[in-house]
Amino acid sequence: MNKPVQTHSNNRPIVSNATAQDASFSTGHAAKPRNDSLATSVTYPSSSQKTKSLSNDQIGTDSDAALTRTHSRPGWWKESVVYQIYPRSFQDTNGDGIGDLRGIIQRLDYIHALGADVIWICPVYDSPNDDNGYDIRDYYRIHEEFGTMDDMRELIERAATYGIRIIMDLVANHTSDEHAWFVESRSSLDNDKRDWYIWRPGEQEQPPNNWTSFFGGSAWQYDEATGEYYLHCFSRKQPDLNWENPDVRHALYEMMEWWLDLGIAGFRIDAITVIKKDQQLLSAPYDESKGSVPVGSVCLNRAGITDFLHEMKQQVLAPYEALTVAEAPGVTIADIDGYVDEEHGAFNMIFQFDHVDLDVSMYERAIYKPWQLSRFKQVLSNWQTATAERSWMALYMENHDHVRSVSKFANDAAYRERSAKMLATYYFLMRGTPFIYQGQELGMTNHYFTLIDDYRDLDSIHMYNEQIECGRSEQELLDYLYKRSRDQGRMPMQWDGSAQAGFTSGQPWLQVNPNYTEINVAAQLNDEHSVLYFYRQLVRLRKEHPAFIYGNYKEIYTDSEQIGAYTRTYKQEFWTVWCNFTESTISLPDLMSGERMLGNMDDHDSGTLRPYESVIYRTIQAN
Ligand code: TEU
Ligand code: CA
Image (cartoon, rainbow, N blue to C red; front, side, top):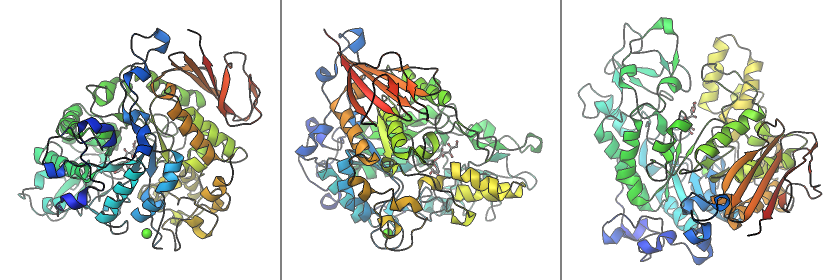
């Protein structure tokens, strides 16, 4: 593995003499003592002073009245809005049909105008692309499709001039099978790195046990060279690292430090709840009578995982004050403390999976179950309530693993624009840091692919082939993929009405949604009533009113199958957020009083919610 040496001149875009006191203007690394030549930092210009945390005074203290009490400590990452980029589909600049880092640089203006202050970039590391970059061959190189390390440095530097911080995807559960560590590991039974991955002998030509990977099929791959199997919770080109081995952990920590030294602000941490393997279960012998066991049922959030997470925090994340958001399937409300407690938690925040996976079960492959509004509201509210005192959530409706939220949770036909704004209102103003996934701010939709050959996602293709073999029909599987395929969220960003939506001058790696002629950035910039403008307004509203950041959350209309609503209270302010998730007009007897602050309809009638209407009210209470 070639770890490039960082030099003073090229690893810091804007050199300043920032000290720990200037923390809100640095990437926050000042706390780690280090060589003077490295103790420079990205500087944010004064136009971005808004990224400074509010003071304790501004957000209220525990001595305030109960209604106005806030429990959270201030933090710049709590006040931020994150924009997620799937680089492959964002903006191509050289006509090869694949988005690239220069494309991101080119669109910084757009992201800044939206109001985002952090960008999470999905993996751009060197990779054979079995899982679109989540199979890393070299952590210290940028995949040539995406550009160069110099482009990366330039991106960090240019983003900083907008006051925008960059976080990278940290894929630490597995590497590519083409990573130098694995190439060594598989070479012989006594290789130094043999124990860096999880190897087991098989049993009578069967894999070591009956676990099946997240992507289907056995989680074990036989390797000729040494006659043993290795574990892969994801694809067979993504062998799991053995976190029990301290050398593995330290190699990963070193890599993380290298990236933080480059000037990134932190990490979105991939599949981190999979890193701990129950050593006993791992060794359970193959048992055909038990059928298959999805790794999701045996490898997520196992006892002992927090030891690893806390070590990582102590060794790297805390000294750098890195922003951390962990992908956390399998973490339940009972586990909050270890993960996101303000003091003891390993991370700043997590992505929970309850609301996005209401429509599937890991035990029933490719079966779609319609979701229910009351459950959707309930799972989100449960997390809100459980984290109210001492922890924090990442708020999201979409990402690169999920379909378009307006197609899933709202109405992508007659009420597309209105319902996209309604859904945005619903999640964005909850307590937590909101994430916007590229294209979500336009109300981009799913697209029905009529041919399996049009899909690119390995998970979708694998599932299709596997289920066809089980006798399912092509039609029902295409129907399923329309509602669940990860490619739904990966179709190219729709910039304008020109060929290929302005995404590329060549052939896109995954087809563009034909509705780009209607749904695109250029059109929405020309229309003050567009979904895009509405997102900008929401971002501004949240930034201007600390109630949405530090205020208390409480759900109302809890049992309603039509309305999602809640209050945010803060000092003297009492806010209500109202969302109609249906096509019916609904009258509301109470609470909708005060000043209307933002809504998705111009002609709003107080006391009524029209189809997919949303509205936000504020009352200021007398002292
Ligand atoms: O996703 C991993 C992940 O945990 C889920 O998508 C998982 O399949 C599901 O929770 C099962 O319940 C991450 C990335 O976001 C994804 O794109 C990658 O393919 C995957 O890790 C492997 O790196
Ligand atoms: Ca390109």
